[in-house]
Image (cartoon, rainbow over all chains, first blue to last red; front, top):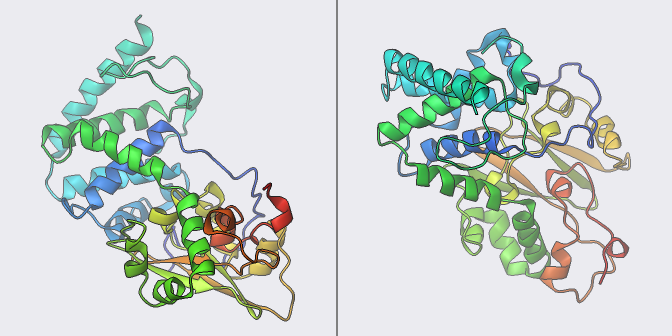
Length: 108
Length: 222
C-alpha cells in the first residue's frame, strides 16, 4: 500500500527549475535548525525515519502542509511521544504565544 | 494547522521577535504555524533540551552549508586521484579533510562517465546530502520531481535543459534516511592545468544532483 509520501513513479506535472526555486526564509531555517539540533550526536532525540513516520501520519494532510510546517508538526509530535513535554504544557504554551502574537499584531 | 493558509499574506505581524531581533522581510507562514513553532522552541528551551544560542548557532550552520562545499570536493576529486579514490571508497574519511561530518547519514558518491549519467532523487521525502550541498532546492522536494524522476528521468532532464544521448545510460539513485548521494560530474575538456579553486567554479549544485552538466570553461571569467 502506498502512503501519502510515496510519489515514486506516479504521474505528475512538469518541473520548472526556475519557478520551483525558493530561498529558505528565516522562519524555515529556524525549523530546520531545531530539527538538526534534535538529530545531533549530543541530543539524539530524533532520527530521520522518526521524523518521516510523523510526517507520513498526516495522511491526506501531508499534501496540504507546506514543507517546513510538516517538519514542525513532526518535531512537536515526536517531542510529545518522547515525553519531552506534555499535551497540557503544549496547549498552555500555545495559548500564551497566541496571546502574545495577537497583542503584538494589533498593538504598537 | 490543516486549515488553508489564509494568514500567510497578512503583513500585520510584529516587527520584532520577543528577544528584540528584527524579523526579516521574509514572508511568514500561517499564524497557527508561527504559534506552534514558537511554542515548541520555547518549550524545548525551558526543558533545557536546547538553548537560544544553540538555535542561533544551528541557523548559522544551516546558512554555512552551501553547494560551494560540494564544488570544492568535486574539484579536488578531479585534481587529486588519491583523494578521489578515498572519496569513492570511504567518503567519511575524504570528507574529514573538509571538516564535514555526514553522520548519522552516509554519503555515496556516484561518478559520471562517458557511458553513465547519474541523477539523484528522494521519492519518499527530501533526503539530500545537506552537509555538502545545504538545503535542497524547492523542486527537489516537490511531487513532480519526486514522482517522475524514477519513471522518466530523461524527460525531467530535458526540462532542466539537459539532453543525455540515447546511448548513454541514465542511472537514478533514490536516496533514503540513511544514505545520501552526490554526483561526481565529468571534468570538462579544456581545463588542463586549472587549479582546484578555478575548477570548483564550474561545479553547480544542479550538476551535483545530476540534473544538469557542469559549466563549460567558456562560461566563467578568468
